Each structure stands twice: as structure tokens, then as C-alpha cells.
Length: 207
Image 1: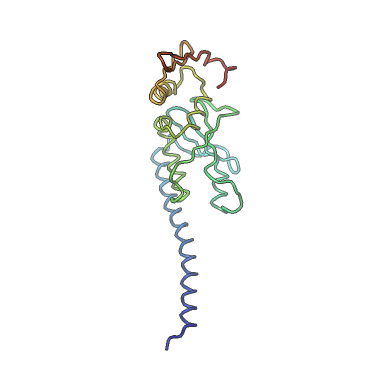
Image 2: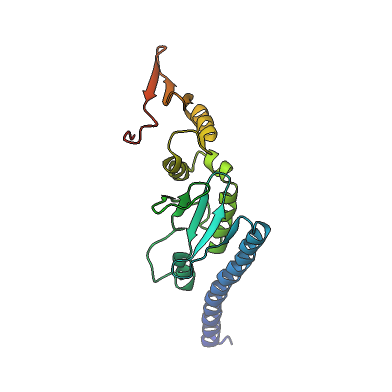
């Protein structure tokens, strides 16, 4: 004769254990992700390092080919400590500083990688750091408009570390050309017309 009460209790115990196993697995995967992040930093120790400020104003600094970047760490650490304490989701905006100096009020880029909902947060952070190291590829990615805008806001439409990449982007995406010396963008329209947008290097002109 089957003891239904015993089977019911056993099934309940197994379901409860599954909850603990699932939670433990997320922690294990994040620990693996920490080693992934550590490997990236150690492989690029001359370009990725912790800033001089301590918590809660600490930053992870990445020196890219196009600019320097700061990832604020406090919100990330707090999210790992207790994800329920803050309703803000996603990786915090990355500060974008021009090559060779730090600025008081930098542009910020919201870089939210696609398809990261199923991977550990530490993996997402590692992938972000790797992308900023290879920032030329990130700039050319059509889906990274906020990142491109932050860099263009940092340098303006003049000759800069991003000017050649931006010219390539305009040509590939819109069939447009940019003349930095003439401060003009040219876009072919219909019926043989060409639109000329001038004054692009004027700081009082905005789009």
C-alpha cells in the first residue's frame, strides 16, 4: 500500500531543494564570471584598472583607443549584494572622457548589451569591459547609438580620434559624406538633389 502522505512530503522536499539549488547555481555562475572578468583585467592591466577613489566613489577605468572610460562600481556592487534594494536595472551609464585628460562633466553612454538576460551579471560586466577595450568595433556597431552619441558629444564634429570612424559610419548607414574642414555633411536626396548641412562645428548648433 502506497503511503501518499510520505510521497507528498518527499515531493515537497524535492521542490524546496530545487529552489536552493537554483539560487546556488546563480551564485556559482557569477563566481565563474568573476574569474572571466579577472582574466580580462589581468590580460590588459595597462589599460584596465581600479581608479584612485575608494568606495562609494570607486570606478573601473578602461583606456580605449578612442577615449577613456569610467564604470561606476558602487551601484554594481550593491546590485550583487542585494538586487532587491534598488529598482534600477541594467549596467550603469559609462563615463566617456577624451583621450589624455579627465573632464569634470563627461558625457555618459548607456551600453546595454543585447541577449544578456540569460547570463550572469559578472559575465555582462566582463563583456562590457572587453567591448570598451575594443571601442573602435563598438563605435561601428549600428546598435550602439548611445555610445556613438556620447563620443561625438565628447569631441564634436571636428578632426578627432573618432572622426574617420564617424565618416565611415555615415557613408555606410546613410550614404552621406562629411567634410570636417568645411564643417559640412552632404546627403543625397531624391531627383538628383543633394542636401548640405553646414555649421556642424559650431558649438551653438545642435541637431
